[in-house]
Image (cartoon, rainbow, N blue to C red; front, side, top):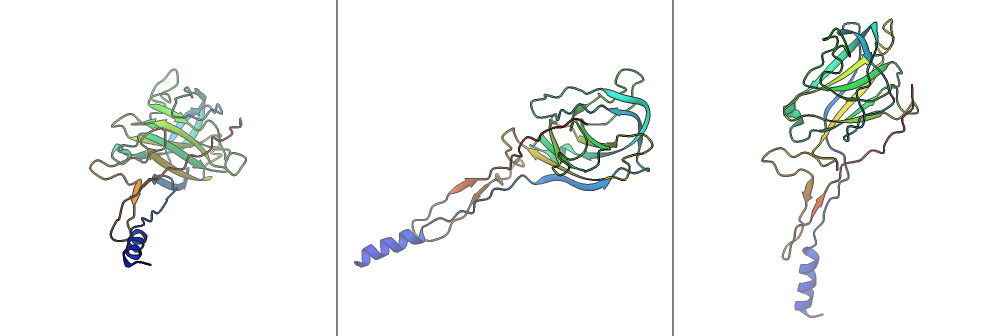
Length: 227
């Protein structure tokens, strides 16, 4: 074999670009395990469970309020607009085997019982909810999606759903993820290169760069069951 041919083949081999392919979901902007407690704030009444999980099309309409004379406890988790950044398309995953906890989402603030009539303030700033309680088939976490208005904080609310404090103390795991669009694109911080684009260059000579776009995991639509 000629030396020139050997050099060309060697150069070609060394110029190969190896790319690490990643198929990971977006990084959660909020992740907490907790439970509603007797020390948490209280509200009179709660959202009705309509078995419809909100999505980015806005398909769920406000479900209404029931049991206005019953006291419930709730926890409210505030995710700042700065943390949401360029990812206003929010997906909320709620892992709880309890049939007596419920999750909903609001823009800016949560104002239960702020009105003496109508929906009692539960409709104010409402973005959506999971539609039901308890994991699907007992094992698959619930999830729903909301679109947060620009510059608004996101408030995720978990309340118990039965009188006499039933559901208080039942554990849950809450995960909030943000995306730039309905294609599950990872949000990009201003002035920072897209973290979803990865290039790895190895070799010398005729080297090139291959950029591979990471795709965020798209969960299959859950099958909703009435409660």
